[in-house]
Length: 141
Image (tube, rainbow, N blue to C red; front, side, top):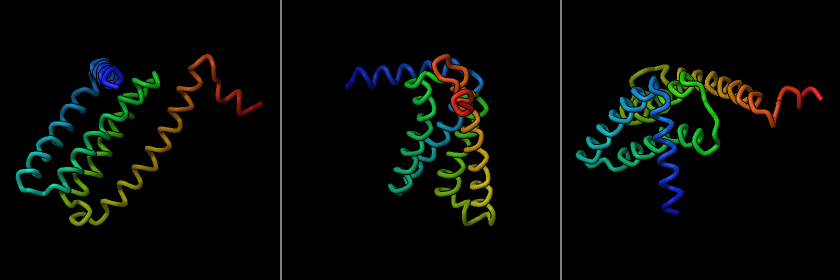
């Protein structure tokens, strides 16, 4: 079990160093989440601290998927996913943007729709690049 975790961690680190343009986004957002986590623990707000931990896990997920499935997501898509996670969890829940800004929820749901469409098109493109599976040919036949 420890070997799998270590191998997964090394694969995630390799993915992060491979895409240097997304590395700074990863680093900046994670440092912000860690800072908010420390503040939430300091203020003894353990529910929000747990939400920060879950947010950090969610931020690792795209890199983990790329490492384990050996697929490449476009860097802008990864950045949009990370900003969406940060906006929904940290800004929306912890910083109460849902209450402060009238259309915060609408903006996030609209962005989520576009994000799902982009992920769908990216997955079709990724599958078509593989020699084993050509999705477009499979659908036409």
